[in-house]
Image 1 (cartoon, rainbow, N blue to C red):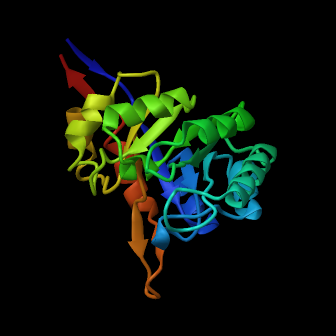
Image 2 (cartoon, rainbow, N blue to C red; image 1 turned 30 degrees about the vertical axis):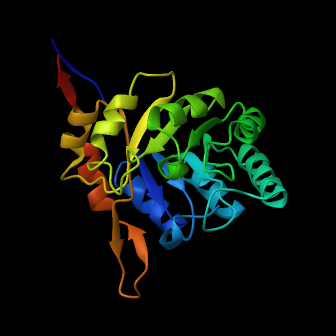
Image 3 (cartoon, rainbow, N blue to C red; image 1 turned 45 degrees about the vertical axis):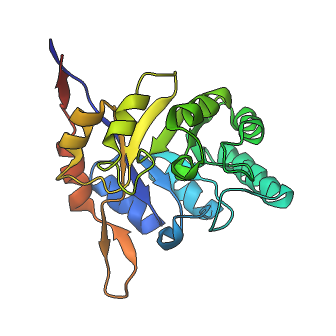
Amino acid sequence: MYFCSMIDVEICCNSIASAVAAKDGCADRIELCRDLECGGLTPTDEAIAYCTRRLGLRTHVLVRPRAGNFCYSEYEQMEMIASIKRCKELGAAAVVLGLLTEDGKVDVEVTRRMVQLAAPMEVTFHRAFDEAQQDPEEALWAVASARCDRLLTSGQRYSALEGVGVIRSLVGVTGVKIMAGSGVTPQNVYRLVEASGVREVHGSCKKRLDDGSFVTDAATVRQMIDRTLYLGSSF
């Protein structure tokens, strides 16, 4: 049987300018952050409000208080909780977070508390998963136990294409949606979706400016979305 299913594309945006470019490229969903050069940190309240209220984008907000590892102190957890509350007040559709224990496993207990606090927003567990010192399926079940709605992963490899086998093995195992991310481009997204079976992809579609910084490129976003409109799989 052959069927077609639209793919949900999430564009990673590091600023209001990037969010505007994503919308110009016909995106309706973004992950909003800042300081993408260090992997992304929690954006400002002003940026969140602009994206949700002025641009009308489905805005998934990264909640990450600092760069580095994903084992957070009590005070950093308090900062994350405050950020989650602000995201809810500002109309975000979801928050994106990831917490690991000192021994490198998914922190189910603390994550579950944050998921409960975030409701009715969705919660995506981000690529902290790819640094977890656990078997991928075991880590996925931990994410599910924490009641997260979605997992962003590269299959515990540098790029989603490299980790496509692991990503495929996770699709459908739990009720958690699997979103492939890292190195996703308009040129490889079709191959990635067909090989992995995911129905959500995450990409930055960025270009480098003269000063060395990055910004989302509207034309690349449009190409990504055009190439995912009617992706299907054969069974």
